[in-house]
Image (tube, rainbow, N blue to C red; front, top):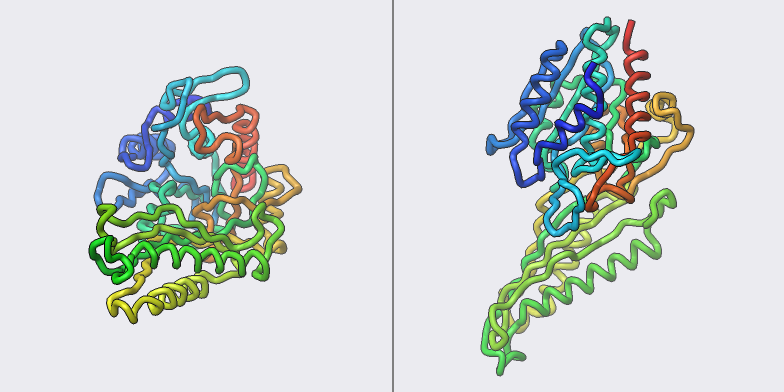
Amino acid sequence: MTSTLGILDKLVGFDTVSKNSNLELAAYVEEFLEARGFAVHRITDPGGDKTGLYAEKGPDGDGVLLSAHTDVVPVEGQSWTKDPFRLTQEGNRVYGRGTTDMKGYVASVMALADRIAGVDLREPLKIALSYDEEVGCVGIQHMLDRLAPMLGQPRACFVGEPTEMQVAIGHKGKAALRAVCHGQSGHSALAPKFVNALHLATDFVTELRALQDVYAKSGNSDPAYSVPYTTFHVGILSGGRALNIVPDRAELTFEYRHLASDHGKDILSQIQDAAVRVGARYQALCSEARIEVEQYNAYPGLDVVETEGVIAYAQKLAQSNATTKVAFGTEAGFFSELGIPTVVCGPGSMERQGHKPDEYLEIEQLNACDAMMDRILEDISR
């Protein structure tokens, strides 16, 4: 038998920061699973330097789906005291980039595949591994057209993001947007005669803040989240080329993270209306004044109804009576939208360990994940 820690040691050794290829890791996983009787399919990205994997073993049927991503966040600019791409064990912790988010879970899944090798299954085990999750769930969106027909309709899907092995039944959806503000250039000595694109930009930010106030004070609320309402955030604002030139172009990059009860298309419509209002204020001075809004990425939230059977099943497997909702996004919403009962449950803490320098995973958490995998094996065996 191959130990979970031994597999994790191999996985951490692959530098799969999202900007890099994951093909070496994928080849290792592919060879590992095929040697244990899994049918493995590559779902390569449009550029050819990354790939997702779908693997299945067992008779035809619904089965259980285990899902994870293979990319990790960067280490640049962080103060690591250990080699981030070498597994280091100290006491009851193992350190390395991705140990918590989420190669520990991938290692546990692969160790389950190893234990399945000689077992007679009554229903299939299905495994889906993606890429580019850390840059906005991009990889799974490229994979879905090919992945969905292969998946069928598993009776349960577990996305193994770090929840400290609690059963997470919800997270917010997210959209990333870009607003380009068009004004009018001219000499700064005559600035009032021209439309400063940065003025449009800052007015638009004010509109977004006003929209935030509406959602915070009178919008839908879910107390299961630490921030219980839909949020808006401006991350980047740029414009201008020189101090003595009135800028004719400015750009904002921003996002909203929304509750399931607040529909993304409605929020986008409100944002677009705000952009039109701001542009109209300046068009008497410059007919070209306007703001163009583009939504360039989005992923769905997850909101599992408390009565769904997948919750009780997950609690039994994870040996947990509680449920939670998480602040971060996952790929779970994509599987849920396919009609697959889906929850998030995996080892480690995103708040304490994920994306941090000297990322680590407690061995006790990894053992708890392995125990959950053993219960899955018992459940799907004859």
